[in-house]
Image 1: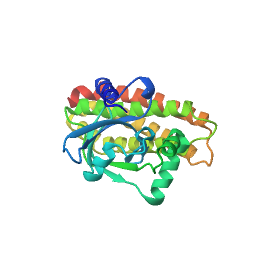
Image 2 (image 1 turned 120 degrees about the horizontal axis):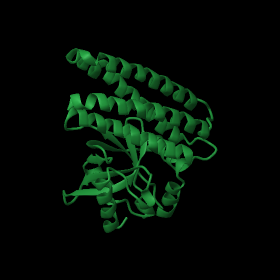
Image 3 (image 1 turned 90 degrees about the vertical axis):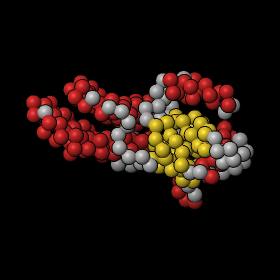
Image 4 (image 1 turned 30 degrees about the horizontal axis):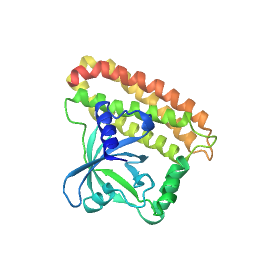
Length: 272
């Protein structure tokens, strides 16, 4: 993309917590900042991404250009990069995928969006697939209550993206959409487990009067866990119906959003 267009997207992305309009509206977008291989200067590029468990995948398409993009050359020279998803900013290690793994994941991307295949064909080169592994640990910086809202907003946004992807899916469930759902399920399970095992016991010890609230939140975790289990069962089927998936995601979203709203109402003032 031209630099001035890139900068417009970057500015809009940062001003609107990752939301942009135009051709990227409703899509999966991050800002990737690399260190210039020759200059040592920071270089930020908006990129589409694909979830893949505990990592993100980006593809060095350069819009079908015959040359690899600058950000790809930069991360080959210095694989530590900065990722902005609109809600959180973190350091990551970039790993260029090769061999069968690269072929499998690129094929999965093309199944979801044939545009990747068109870019590769027009470029005359094999488009590199890069995995971004987060290397930070712990909650977002700032007050604990605000950090909790940020984490919750990540789940709200991911569910909205999955709902959109399921609603626009064809008659067959693409492998990437299946991965998106399973990644969200795992991340939500980890978050609720951390609350049940660490956050809630600490709050209950410090604020005994909060016990009924925390008991309700833990009971709601059990409901969400059941819905996540049903969603995983659906995804384990050989050929699940995307419309059935959409109904299950809508059911989970309704239950989860009510839970997150109540948790924030009750806990954020104390955590802050």
